[in-house]
Length: 111
Length: 115
Image 1 (cartoon, rainbow over the protein chains, first blue to last red):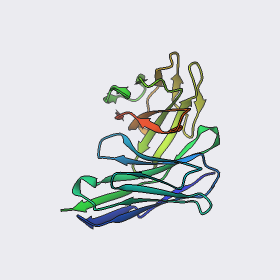
Image 2: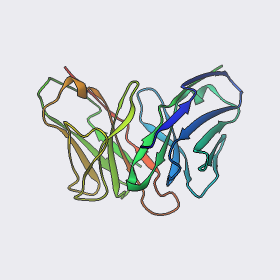
Image 3: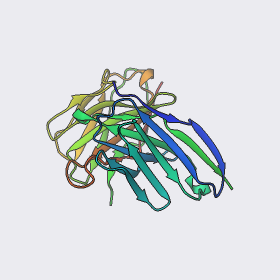
C-alpha cells in the first residue's frame, strides 16, 4: 500500500527566506504527483502537477521536482511572503486512479 | 468559471437523520471523487466515479452511498448519520486526457456536524 509522508509537519520562517518542503512516497510506480495549497477552512488549490515522465515543474516562485526512483518530491518556494502561509499537501496518483495524500506541511511565514 | 461546486457548505444533523451532499462540475471531467478530511487523519477517499453511471468504493466507504446519474453531478448520501461522520467533505474531479491528465480540482468543502 502506498504511503506518502511530508516532512516537516510544520515550519515557521521569516519573510524573504527560500524554503523547501519535502514529500516522499513508498511505491515508485506512480502516474503523477501533485502539490496543493490549503488555506484554513478552504478547499485545496492545485499548485503544480508533475507527470511521471517529468523531472520538474515551475510556476512563478514555486518549483517542484520529482525523483521517482528515490520516491521523493520537493516543493521549493523562493522569497517567501506572509501570503504563502498555508498548509501544503502532496498527492500521488497510481494505477486504478487511486490518489494518496500526504499529511501536509503547515507553513507560517512571519513578516 | 465555477469549477467544482459543493452544496450545502454547512449542515448540522441529528444522529439517525439522512442527507445528501451535491457536487457539480462544469469542466466535463470524467472522474469525480468524494473525500473526508479529519484532523490528524488527512484526506481519505470515500467513493469515486470513473464516468456517468459508475461508482466505486474508496478507503472509507461504510455508511455512505453515492450516485452519478449525470456526468456533471456526483451525490454523496448519508442514510443514517452518526457522530463519527462529523467531518469536512470535499469533492474533486479530474481530467483524463491531454497534457494535464490527472490534475485534481477540488470544491470548497462541506462541513457536516452530527450531534
